Length: 204
Image (tube, rainbow, N blue to C red; front, side):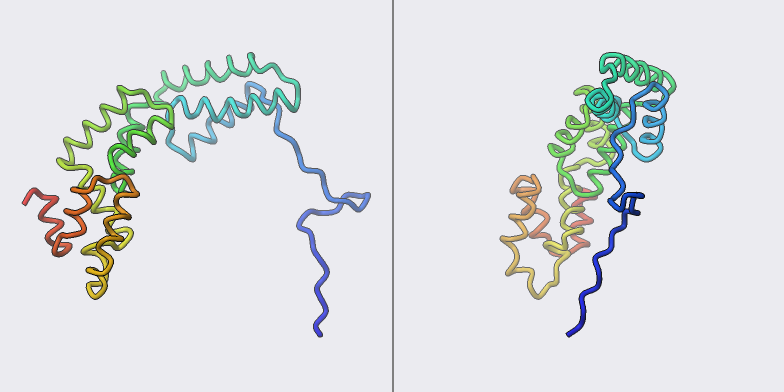
């Protein structure tokens, strides 16, 4: 019988032989919050409100762990948001348009786009403008999103032709669960081919 290997830890031992203690959250100083904000913006596109939430979580953790002043931290965050908006580092309208277009390409219906932008703290006016822009660039955005979803999940015309008819109801249900209405789902799933879908999207 093979012997079991001894259990190994990735944590280097302390001089007392125990594990190194896990560090708590960093103190939310003004410079720390600015560094955290710039690091976040270098990695993610975001709305002003979402960045505020990210930074306020740091402020709240610091207040609980270090006893720092949460109100002072909130004031620093507000100042950062104002400065970044003036500098163009935060632009909710541009963020909403880019995010909406990306979600459409990934197969998100328009009501899902609206809901997700609301979750990110984007205002109703910026959301409406982003949805309007999508509709101008793509006459039937929900249909385009449904086609993108079907392509990604290999549904309908994108499925193996030998099993396509047997899967029809399941494919329709998959689009329904994703938030598409029945008529849109049926147009995609019942299209004869990928070429027919392309013609449909082109208005043919």
